[in-house]
Image (cartoon, rainbow, N blue to C red; front, side, top):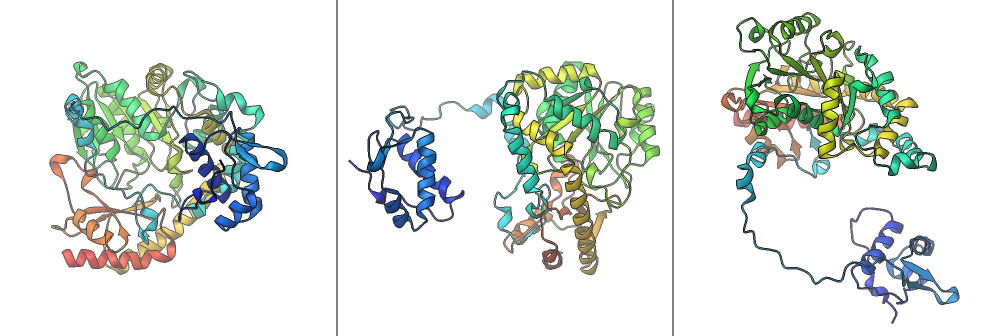
Length: 496
């Protein structure tokens, strides 16, 4: 029995090329059992006419399905569903089971509770004015060379990198590029046994926290900035560690709590973002960095340096990393490619003494073994061929222009910048008048197509300031910035 041509249709708005969508329709029909082995497919001409597309597109899709053994070609007779086509298990559709177990009770709900208040629309790209942090602008990305590097990594020569289980190891080609290209520009000298690849900076911070604060019985505490990067606060919240928040100033983390007899004590773990303080964008001066390291040796504590946005210093020359000044092995350095290449890649790294990296490697192996080999090798090629540096240069130039345009619009509308970010970055830290709840303003603006990030989630829950917000310029088109800022100003004025 032939499969009727009416069994196929092209859904509006579906992703992928026409050829890939035809392949998906056929494979779905076969795997679901609707198309059975031996059934004749519609002719390429008939299906093309029915779908309103080119016959060659259908022919190419059929040929691809033959090579995958979903279809077979019988001379002049046409195409048929292959007798050897993959088949899904013939199980009846199960009913959804009743939830007899309260799984949140097992963890006390601490994970979902820690993530409350995180509101990030998946469809942010459809908003005309997306002043949101952490998303990229596709027009700035080097698609052609990234694709070339990815195809090279898929080649026969790199087949073992693509398919092998590295166990606890990392791709030596990417480790070499991190050691030769990335770390030297931060002043950091390291060996292969001092670097571990991670699934982004967030994963790096989770690993570091698990090692340094994973045994509550040892009585270690965490010291963090206030306001600070929400990701580390959430990790610490679920870890059960005691957390001390120190209010930042125009130079980042202050040293007042690090004096003898101060809030920071022996064995504590201090989290700091010295390059661009998250979220205020303050950059810690060299003198303060040196004094922080002196305090670490004197008071016997460990520092985790999250080198947030170090590549985006386009207003002034980049400062040396805290890790580069460390002579006692007290700094654990976390970096990431996810912001500088694209967020969805999720690739970062830890740099630390060999003893720490050995523990981190073992902990990573328990959770995910290693980041995907194909991604590692693609990034290695992207770095080795100079595409990474060209991309960073293009992003810096674009961000410099966007920042200037946004700053002019902000000043023209009378809004207040709370954190100047004298070195660059990709956002402004803003302050609304006292009494303004920026979470409510964000909800109102969203109805008008404007996305902003309320600041309350950055603060210590015991000392929340609701009149701060963050405006990013990494993903919004420059021509839209003035009108978007104007809408934000009107919304703030209406609430105020």
